[in-house]
Amino acid sequence: MDGAPAAAPASVEEARQRIAHVPLVLNRRSFNWLTQRISEVVEQPAPRWWWVIFTITASAATFGIFCIGYQISTGVGTWGNQIPVGWAWDITNFVFWIGIGHAGTLISAILFLLRQKWRTSINRSAEAMTLFAVICAAIFPGIHVGRFWMAWYLAPMPNNWGIWQNFRSALMWDVFAVSTYFTVSVLFWYTGLVPDLATLRDRATTRIRKFLFGIFALGWRGSNRHWRHYEMAYLLLAGLSTPLVLSVHSVVSFDFASTVIPTWHTTIFPPYFVAGAIFGGFAMVLTLLLPARAIFKLQDVITPQHVDKMAKVILLTGSFVGYAYAMEFFIAWYSGDHFERYAFWNRVFGPYWWYWWFGMLFCNMLSPQLFWFRWCRHNVLVVFFVAMCVNAGMWFERFIIIAGGLARDFLPSSWRVYYPTWVDIWTYIGTIGIFTSLFLLFIRFLPMIAMSEVKTATPEADPHYGESPEIESLPAGGKERTR
Image (cartoon, rainbow, N blue to C red; front, top):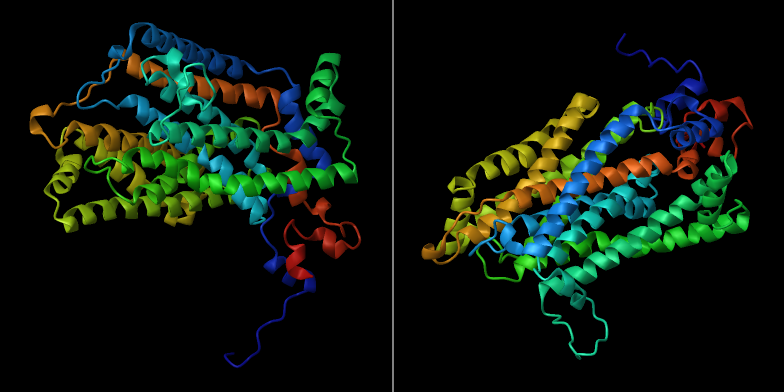
């Protein structure tokens, strides 16, 4: 009947279960299970598929290094660069790889400061991805200067010639931004590794493994004093890393925004580049973790909730990127600048038109809109497809901004279309091989998931665990809501 009161819940337990959070570790896994499942990836012999993939990626990396050596010994004429396109695949790849690394800092630092527990299952791999991406990115500023053996002049160090660097050069800004970012990222990554290295040290069955893990564990014993110092150091590094999420790619964007080239000379670039970096970085995290999740059977640790939240971040940052695309065209029209208007018209209908239609429109703007639907966010194949689209789209975006802006400058007499050479192509493929090989080595020799942090998201981490059946029966994350 309409006037009848609503039925009361069968028990207090049922009511509590309704408001409890979805657990971050499924099937009530214990500390021991987490340690065993994550450690055995490192402790067991490498499977055959690992050797097959590593052989392929290492071969690509080796040929890429050969191309770099060939370019250094022969000159930048081996690239397709010409006048007016002096920057092409080299700077495109630099910006692409730097952007990939931003998700690691965001997940590790900002989400840590916001006390987001869901970061614990993915932060270690994201941090490692950051380091490997920055290593790949650092290759290109060095070799694109032409005289690679003189690249050390970019560092502000004393020398016999009394030469001081030109701090008004965007190249100098990149040196400071990338070196600072890499240094802090290494410290942050290694600090988080220390407790897990101690776990692997204690589980080691050979003297060499015990010795190596013992050296890098820095004498960690898990005492109260050790944990207090560890948490303070981690908090300080998180606070230091947080501004880098915004500053590094903003500095990279100044390489373009500080010039007068049409489509480059715009104040929207810093937030536009930062949003795009987080957008592409989270897509790369999903690209790497979804296969690893399936291969190593880590579905209870990297849960659908983690995939769902990362998909939402991609949807949010993808919306920012789409808004920036729209504003670029609007401001070009509203400014009344004929050069600017033509440059954006050329982006859509010029020689690189398919880069815009496929890369920027379909991959970056349309494909993430699938994540408005919950079933898409929970379908691993759909999520992986969108992540791959975003990875490709972000590279196309950087290329059309850089090469597209230079190919059609102020003088029609100097217009020229850029075409990459085999050295361009294989140098980029080589960096993909370096990145993938380093990640494969990482998951082979180090724990890809932070055991000590994931354990804080389990029911056993609660100080009142085991005191009463009611508390013990709640999923992780639900107890705070019910007290």
